[in-house]
Image (tube, rainbow over all chains, first blue to last red; front, side, top):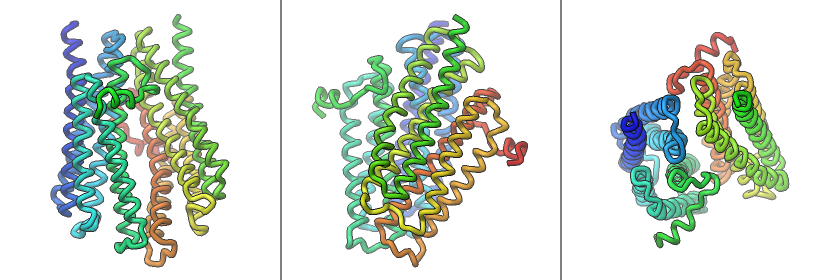
Length: 227
Length: 227
């Protein structure tokens, strides 16, 4: 039974990692759909979100079963209690990728973003996939010294988010109100996506160190890491 | 021990209800600060969010302790597993109230919203406090037939959110891009706030009925309820 039990715990981590891969891919494909005004790709992202939701439901069910049938303590219990929180975060990241795809579909066959902002959104899409990929590695490895780059990516994302704000609010913005709102909301979806990756990273630190989630601070890890 | 155990479970529900009251009050006070461009009130909402975060951390700790020291099953286990999810949702609602207050502070001494939209935001503030108050009652009572009004309030909120979108995108919108973005983001904070209340309601239904959260559908409850 003991082996099965640890297999079950490993399965939860493996499924969480799979979820992070799915939503990273979804956000990157949503970004490509956004850049190319590609309706078909956008719709595949929208439909694909069901698989993410199904995985989240499966993880919840498994965490529940383990808690009910076994008596997990210490790290194992933290894996379960944090597992259901992390699945909520990753599920929400999937929703954000879906929002980007829906925005693309809404404006099709027009593009939701003006040509001069394409590069910025391309960069945000890359950062989104990079940050969730790092978070996935952390879930799998429990190597908290790898948390530094997550903070780094999040800082870069925040910077791009603020830049976009300045651009759409500049007196020279030539694309009107609708476009400014589209850009602002889209930018916010990417920023929130990165925030969730930070939350997941802090939960992994909590699992590994036992430090209460509320007081986990990623700063010192960054300076240790030098990243 | 058994009595203490049930006292502990009751305490979790009571603290969740307290959190819903805090964030309902926070969102309503943030709305008032927004309407009056009241910096002092906005700052009190921003500072007050720490109490919400502290309660969320306390609930998490208690859920963890009960899971580690007792062997909760069935409904009790669902209370604990859902408790940590609900505390995440309510904490996020507190963040959204803080976002409204921060927007107010950002534009002070100007108002973030034009006079003709005051009534709509006043209504959204009222709906926000009403929906989270209903959710709080559900957490306390476990009376799932009372879920109907939550769906109802959420529908009303979505309607106002869509109305605001149309207004800022109308060719007659006279207030420029910055104001359109302010209104859109603010409106989204209220809409998300209501979404979280719906999520909480579905979790209570899951606790009471044992139905998996993923398949909980509030529609039939509304028709039973007639609300």
